[in-house]
Image 1: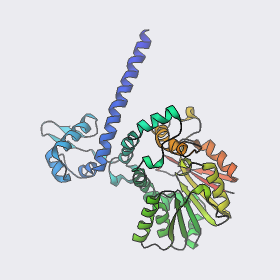
Image 2: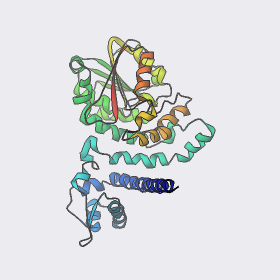
Image 3: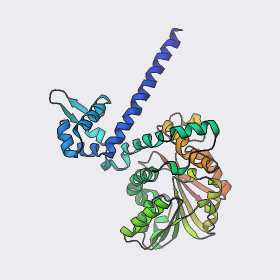
Image 4: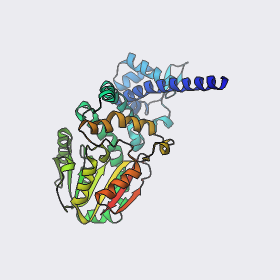
Length: 353
């Protein structure tokens, strides 16, 4: 009995820690959105008034936020001088200048998912799912999150994963990006490889409009976008390269999408698929540093959105084993899985028919 009481006490402490960290996640999101972390990274230890003046924010709100960051061990505080300081070691994963290492950007998903909690509870009771339209900020957050990866890694690290692909793209290929979102990857590739032609498909009108605007601003003539359902892709043998960056598991009918992709490639074409690194078996994800977050994302977005459209509902952590199986079923015979240094979240599948 004594042992059970100790376990109960330890677990209650764990739950309290979860509560505190959940609240801090909201504060981290605010720090990101208001640029407080970015500004403080360049400031010496400062008072709340000084920080408010530098950021142009309301001092009373800034002060309360600062105090939350202090008790959360995120900021340092000098009680003698009433000054707050963001250590360089903490700024390294909280500021926009951190690039792909910026973790504060992910905290924005906490409030986004919280907004649909009651609808998710209803789906628990009645089945079905929550449609994409219930997440009005998702495209914006997804674009901000993936831009960190694309801007720092796409051209120099991700594309070179496929032997000979860089040279082929320099000479000129026809490429399609499935589930392109706001088109950042398409536009970066089009800018880097002007002799190649790039097309991006997505079902979101707003996302496609954003991609087109960015292509126009960048002066690109080889980047194009279309509002299309990837499951209805019927471009047989048309592309040298098809990419899908963290978009296949979100599809309502991913099995159909993969088969359509395989059929749309030329005989020597390549499918490059970025998707979440993890196992299809939950017990093998116990040591995954992001497993709780990923299963939560799945329950409250990826899986439920698919189910809302009578989809297969694979979920975020469908895993490498299932991915390999589905790629084979789609018609791919040669499949490699690679990783990129600095990207702990994703696997990169290189598939050929």
